[in-house]
Length: 304
Image (cartoon, rainbow, N blue to C red; front, top):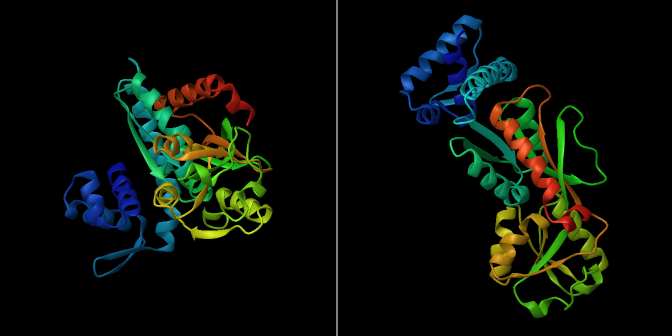
């Protein structure tokens, strides 16, 4: 068993097939196939079920993934430590994030990081849920993870947590007249009769929307959408008023939408996470910058 075999194996797992794995690694498909066959011969078992051109992991293939990722993480860590001897000039950092947090605080953090370390490549993997972020970290698919949880919910115990900020929920409207005037946070009753654009059940934005629906007589759901990236475009299209996390504030204001904070007993704690143990120099630098950012950001943000 060698590193090339493990890297090719994980590429097939992550890319969903030999063709995409070959493209991502910029190698010939026969090289990938030969490496997989050699690895299976050395292990004495099949790692994939083969049906035509389709590959499906066997139980043995599923079982070897965490160990393979651990080995490759160790190799990548050793290489990055050597590369950083003369300063963080190169490297690659993989971050898994949920959509709202990818908008903020991740986007401004990445911008500041690359100002200091322009030679480092940042890869942001999208996660549909908090569980996806945790799974990516535990499985080695990403080195850092960014997600939000209810302030009343405990973070995962097996991960190292760095708290960044607390975010409140907002309502966003196309027409300023759709929201009562004034700077104070809006109670749910202020949205009586409103047609809402809401996230899917089980998410934080949906819990916030449900609180609004329960406290705003005559309000109803206009659109329930799985893709949070489409919330603001739907507001711009006049579909209704959206309930979103504070991470969407900058994008909403830049789009010319009216933004008001909601007065709800629900808020989000935003955490940056990684597996216990040493991290790459790029990850260490990112964690340090994130810590400095969270301590110097808008003081009002610290109270929310």
